[in-house]
Length: 178
Image (cartoon, rainbow, N blue to C red; front, side, top):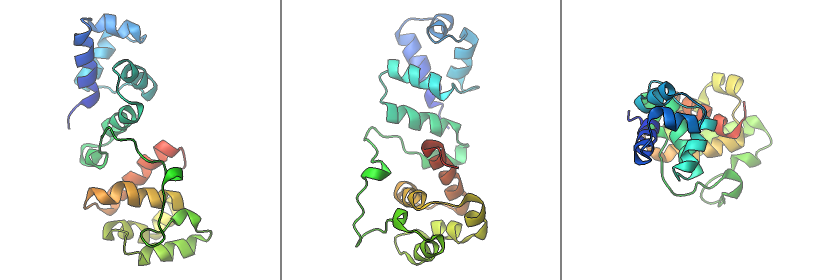
């Protein structure tokens, strides 16, 4: 997969006319570290990348998505679509009862699970993932996470149970839940 972070770092460093050592000193890292970032051998930390992206005038949402995508195995990188449109946060999302169920409103987990398995708006592969006793026993997905999986990942196309497991892990990186 393309080394998006390295490409951005390289292009911006060259545009500024700086050597790797000079560019690195701006961020308190060495020139060899910049070399490794540019080549994709190593990824910068999120904190460091956000500092660089701010200087590069990359919107924060886009820069976080770029960083997350760079951390995923190649086969899952297509799950993260990088676009300049703002992402609607879950708290702001409006759910019309006739269109989509809001699983964050369910109090009982077993009732929520039954509703999910009957919901025609949930893709077959996501249902396969959510049928698993292991998923409910180990991962214990919340209603908010189910909404996000459906709304953010289901519309990307065919997936598999493992892809939804990875998508849940990515969501938890953003939300800080376990």
